[in-house]
Image 1 (cartoon, rainbow, N blue to C red):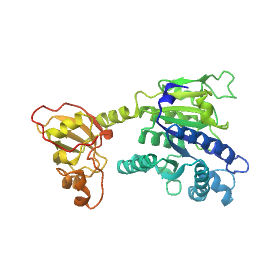
Image 2: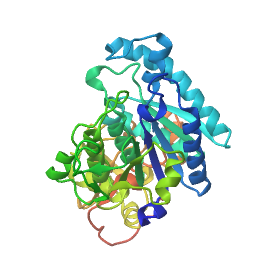
Image 3: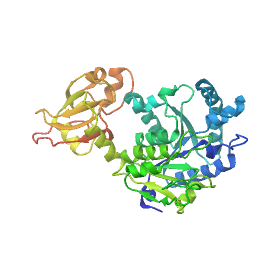
Length: 386
């Protein structure tokens, strides 16, 4: 097995409707799903954190509502999703419980991963579930998303979730076992591509338009998902889900296509913070806090002496020392109005000041990139967080 797999601590597994639902009866493929859950439980036993991104709610719901085959109107699709989501969630809960695991349902829209505050809330929720040993089952919230505000396929949703939670690997289980130079079965010269180091225009052109009756995506969306995932520091692999125990097969060397990230998720995230986001505010910190940041700690309110700007939670802020030297940039855990009330105070005092138990850090170290060095001098004692 590849070194990337062996080293992975957090994985996202995406499966589409064509793998979950019988094409004629439109019934859930319970036996196949049970083998996948066996694989997920085996990975969890090894200490890995597992997230599932699952399609299938619309396909299951349309059968119960008696909709004819073919494209559904927006409101019909939303109704089908509302009905099918219950059956899908119940199946995951039961199968995971039988293996000693807890399930959680997380429904997301495009806006939840595009708007920064909602993005941070979703990220925090999934991270909290993983710390509690729960397996989050994520799906697009088709019941409320409009056609203009939805992904339309769970490949790109899975990629966004994977980068949002800094997953090491995203596994796309598909009805094909990877990327080919042509359409398998139609092009006799089609050649399988086992590894992709860079998504070039030629690679994108190979994706073609392979789709399925139930799924809304094809190989095109999978390559787009790979671009999103790898730019966020997450390796991605496409492999066949048309076998039982698909993760076990992948681990044993089943045919697949690996898309490799340039760096790890933390590095990619910090690069995004440093180079892409426009700072909306400034935090001035004392020397003790500056030294704590350089040692790899989060920035706590106690070490902040002043702030500027009208920033919101999740906005990028500049972090400067008393001399005006920029030490780093990061994502603020509090809006400016609340931040102004707690700067200079210990984290243990936040709840009493704001009336709610917020985050201990003003900028967590995972949401921060260090750009400069603090000037040395007499150190001021300050509260720190590892």
